[in-house]
Image (cartoon, helix red, strand yellow):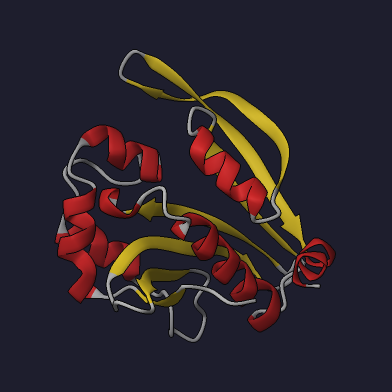
Length: 180
């Protein structure tokens, strides 16, 4: 399975770009619920990176997506909530830079993080949640092989709006089927 992107660990050197991408409160809430306060800061990103990636007991892997041919960072994604006992994890905090949207990078990122989860980490299940109004993301996740499992209605209140969450997942046998 060929990809136009590679995932590398997100580091402190990537903070400014992510902060620039998430330059308004609505985008920040869409990216992470209310996990971070607006505006995004170095301090909150330091907390986000704590005990992630190469740390021996890491339960979250945080990546930047790099377009192979240009070396340009086009997105951000994490694979967290890792349960080694249950062989399960959750994709979260998926973001494509505005200037890179509509070019298929989301599907590339989802496919690559799924490959890492299923092939490198030996997972059985990878889940994700996406706000139901984000139909472009839902379409992307479906194209990558994720199935809708349900909806958590009115699960987040942003100002005067209620946002529902669409729950999706893929199992290891479904992953293998996409690879053949």
